[in-house]
Image (cartoon, rainbow, N blue to C red; front, side):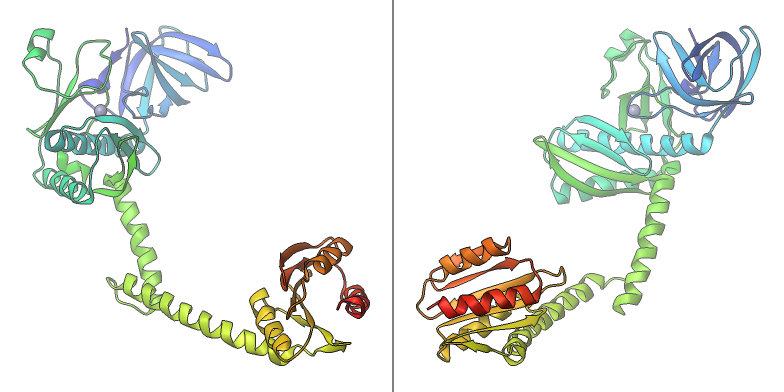
Length: 387
Ligand SMILES: [Zn+2]
């Protein structure tokens, strides 16, 4: 059985140990030691990484009653090795894990909900609760969690006997394999947990719930704490500064500035659409074929073409066909008429130019793909027959 040094002291960064066994396993070696400060994966927390002498430890796994270190180099059985935990990574995870216990403990005591899922990713954490939390609840929980940080409560680890455990009120989400280990945070929370935590809640630093969403009849929250929260704040602050510059707005008025910008864009878009329609009317030079007419333009939308063709038909054209070259090189078209069913003509034109689109009765629109000369030759002939 590997002695788990991290269970009683989560601040051990370096330790000495005796190699019990070392076996080759594909690309790595599975090394078992008599004792270790490396935390294996568990309770939502990833395994530690670091070194054993000059070999990397890439992963640590708990199996039965021993802990396997996956190393890049082999070790002699019974030799003495020096282990070094990558404590920067570990400490961040300790901060995160303690923050999660604090938030879960507060949610449990206020609303009776249980943490039913915990995932710690590289820069944030996700916690799932089996009940609905509203915005006000989230704000309350977050404030209480941060107050508990400011109070700098003791975080202690207890190993109660089965009899003692019966008298303790604790949250439990783990299958207990090797005796019960409880992590107690002041009078705020007590929870069964196998992972290393910080000693004082003050070490957790800021706890920020950055989002929450309904999830499987409950609530999923995303949060950051400690070092992650510091870098998250730095990132957000930098983004904020860029926005302040871009919008010429003060720090806390960015939403109003964006709103104002959206309204301005909407207004300008409406004006642009009106002008674009008038421009189509002005720029499309109609070429008459009998009492029909066609014209080619560029960059006009279907709405612009429709507007112009309506005017031309109102002025007395039987059928008006307008084309506009698009950025893709295709041509959008509208076929408009006063009282003639244009759908058969449009069908024939689509077939001739592998086009798509259609309409109803006297109006149709779509796209065709061909060069302008071919389309013009086609439409000149067609308009002679279309009546
Ligand atoms: Zn835990």
